[in-house]
Image (cartoon, rainbow, N blue to C red):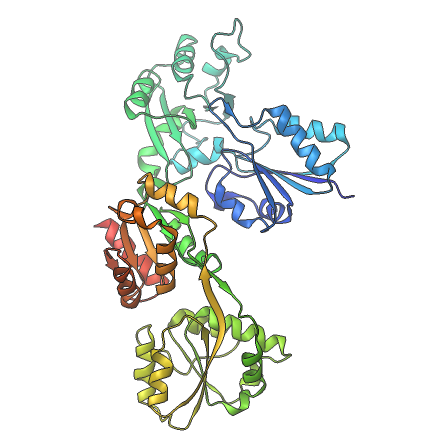
Length: 505
């Protein structure tokens, strides 16, 4: 029976800061035991059938005690399951990971340790504060901020800390900030020593408050800053004014819902995240294969009989070539067939399979393909159109009117996705969402179906709606949404550019 546990540092909050080994451990897990500070987006990498167990500890509110967590990991491993213990930051930097490993050793269970980027380094970096600098500090000291100030004797050498001459970083110390600042000044650290607190570092909710040892408590109270925070004390804090970068991005702090199918959402999420947005991935659709591929397989077996192959989406390209390969053929089977693609993304995906598009219309909708075909003699020509079952009928109808012999074949279905319905409704109810994005008519319809009819007006009030193009915008309006912006270029890149301009304004 296999017994394998991965102790994984999830990083400080930005999901991009987890290591490759960390992602692989999540993907391999049968059971994932995760913490409050472990970024929820990382769970998207888990196997669909993986058991997810929340064991978070938040400000004294413990879902499970540390001993219970230790036993849970052991019990799951003894069931023969691969267990990934996902902890915020690094598991060995004030993460009690050592205690969990000791219990595994006692139980005779094998383990791997995957270090994580600790918030002690990452949060200051994202706030524009280098922990060391030739002019200010040649050392950095990490200290727990959790120590009970009422203890008769402290395990922290406050006198030594006050005279290190380097940077001090306190983790989990926002409640003890008055005690920390007072002790450092009592032991001789100058009252005008720069200090900063960084809350939710590396995330779109990041907040930074600066001051000096003498003023930082008052400044933090005025800002209403609460845990989780990193405290940084030292001359390096003075560099923040010119080095801050993360909080100055154009979409910083904006929470944007992405409704695109998860497999296709990565480009959009990456683009918006790079601009500072927090993307809430609530896919309204998922891509599914048809019940059978008989018609598509038959068409593939007779490819030589077709004159044109028309693709209307990236999904259509992928599904077609998946079946082409399944039939022991490759791109050479297209032979003399000419191809048309709606939009550069579709053409780019087609090129990955070694095929260039003969037609790429100027705008990215079916009507533009029709206009392009008007310049070409298609009467009597055979056209293969593999696409979604739910696609608009305009393209095959108009091609047939031009005299083309069109075989419209279902290559995939777009079906509703409701795995995140509860989280979606909660986010809308809390009014923490700035924008909803729609990239197709199916995302609109399925997203609308996720919201209880009687709550629709209330939940969507005040939320900006962005559509990838006029067809999607019209569908959104028909479904009761107020559309605030439509991409000028009907692509993901065009939509992201339009969103950026909107928020800059």
